[in-house]
Amino acid sequence: AIQLTQSPSSLSASIGDTVTITCRASQGISSTLAWYQQKPGKAPKLLIYDASSLESGVPSRFGGSGSGTDFTLTISSLQPEDFATYYCQQFNSFPFTFGPGTKVDIK
Amino acid sequence: DVHLLESGEGLVQPGGSLRLSCAASGFTFSDYAMAWVRQPPGKGLEWVSSITSTGGGAYYADSVKGRFTMSRDNSRNALYLQMNSLRAEDTAVYYCAKYRSVARSPFDPWGQGTLVTVSS
Image (cartoon, rainbow over all chains, first blue to last red; front, top):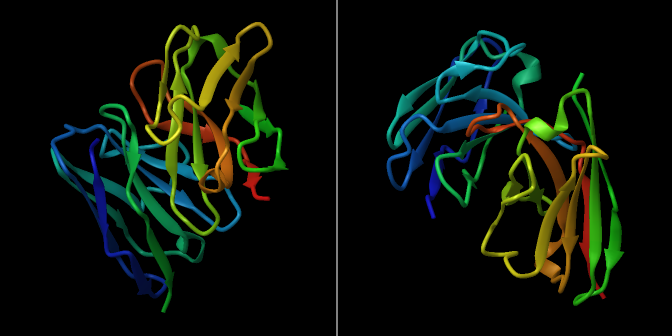
């Protein structure tokens, strides 16, 4: 199974900051990577698919990049509603796997 | 709007069974593969199972293979997860999710989730 690691596991940031989260796959997955945002008590929400494509309705301050094994989610100008946990997911092959998550909280 | 609504929440003893359902609306259900994803309390996400649009193929995580069965009824726009031989480690919120597109893709959207608790 393809393993995904995320770093950092948590971070504290201020409104207006730029935040970068990385996701590394244990083997190459081309661009078959997605990013989700999850707030407490809510279902995950798709932000980015195919590593860098912004899902409809998602603010443009969210951006994704990478291919192969190394991927990045960047949040520019962090807003209050962005404090949440972020997960990467590979959909290259079964079993689909998720990263362990990165919690972004307020500094 | 696409809407997914899970049901079947419950408390079950170890070794017991439970069936989850997911009612879908707002899209042509028979065109899309579907998935179940779970999240133990306070922990991360774990993909459980996926099923093709026709129901002709289903795929499972090793942790549930041989115990869980995913199925669908395209005439009823319904998705199911039959869970047998339940263990304490199956305790989680279970989400049903639609594949984003008809091709290989991530999940979007997700239902609100339903809680399964396995405990004596």
